[in-house]
Image 1 (cartoon, rainbow, N blue to C red):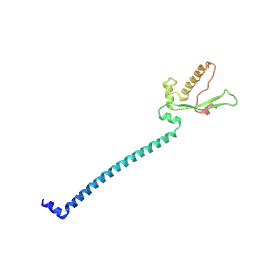
Image 2 (tube, rainbow, N blue to C red):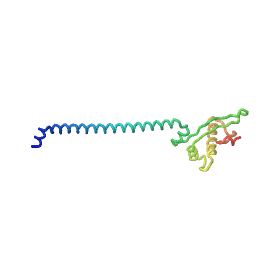
Image 3 (tube, rainbow, N blue to C red):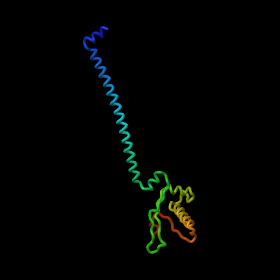
Image 4 (cartoon, rainbow, N blue to C red):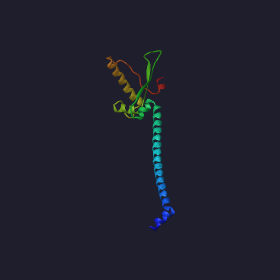
Length: 157
């Protein structure tokens, strides 16, 4: 009790209340700063993720259709171009490109074995497609001759 009277007379009680008030303010400022820091870290993390997603999206937009299909695990084949000999319309060829997944699917479907050359596997499939097309048109492909599928055009010369 004597302490309290002494504190009151000397003004220490007011100083203690003021110090306590400032301590509470400092604690609140520290909590606010911590919350702000956490919010900024969250925003930074979200920004980095968006930047990463944007970069991935940009990289994916640069992929060819073949690369996109391969990346997503899908079989892919495309006719790159067709060529017809100016000297003889009966001579020509298609340039085809495919991914390894397409070859594996053809093997599963019975067009070849694991150790077959991919061109031979695609050749079997392509010939069947041509025969089916003739059949759908009501024509016979029995007397038609077809070339071979090759990736190296120099072999054809």
